[in-house]
Image 1 (tube, rainbow, N blue to C red):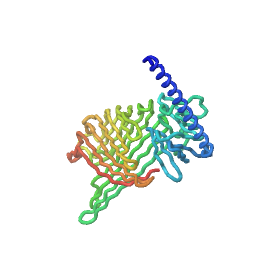
Image 2: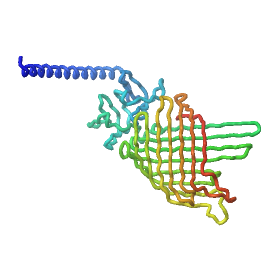
Image 3: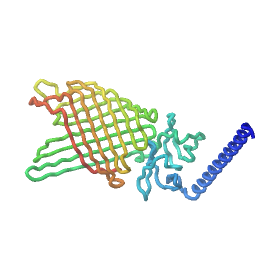
Image 4: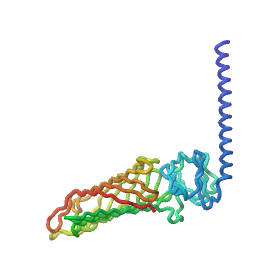
Length: 371
């Protein structure tokens, strides 16, 4: 047998094996589709009032789809409570209710959901997208509280004896999200009393509104911050601005974004020296970054940092950093640990000529509730 004939026989055998493999794969796909249709017919009921998820393991979940974002599905079950499932572990999502779905080309569709076999079909649209093109799913604008996520926390410490000391903190984290828009608000208030005298008191409230241009790039047309700390000689400081942001990392475990933009600031000082203005305003510029990482299924790490370039007349450049650890105790209650750093380059002296320290540090331990 010549070498040519040997290669000819080998090529024929290889072609036959490929045909058999293709046929086997097609038969396997056909069997899987038949099994899915049979399961769907037997299991899925009342898609107008319930959402259904099928896992790769073949298990079905009945409940309410809250959102799909950062390659993670948030799903609420009456029995299992709130679940967070990686998109890669889901083989199908079915719902007769209306959702807003965003894809990586910027297209946003609204309607019922039929996600199976790697395809995403929304409402009665004849077009379909692949699951790899899916960016986010959220309730539509008219879905009421389904778009909202609220976390309220409080912490308090007492000490009695030679010195009576009370330390309290209040936190709030409010989020509203659709497939295209996002609103974020966070509030931190702290207060310390020693022998009935207030020694520390501050309030910081931030609000932002984002429009996602792509799955990573977003425009931030509104940025607002209110800050008060009489012990830094700041009776009130209002910041209003706009900017843009970009997600460097955005997956099921890690989120890391950067933002930047111009700001307008107006500061009213608690007290000032004779002949000094107690209220000044200035334009400035800010850069910031937020990092969130899921250490385990129950523990999340977060880092938030902002730098504001400002004139000396309103206190100079300022920096704010907060490192936090959130431990899930139950499905609705978390233990929160946070370290906060506030820095002002050129604090303005008060009426007695006393200039506040440049740095303030806070350690906060609190319990929070998710709504």
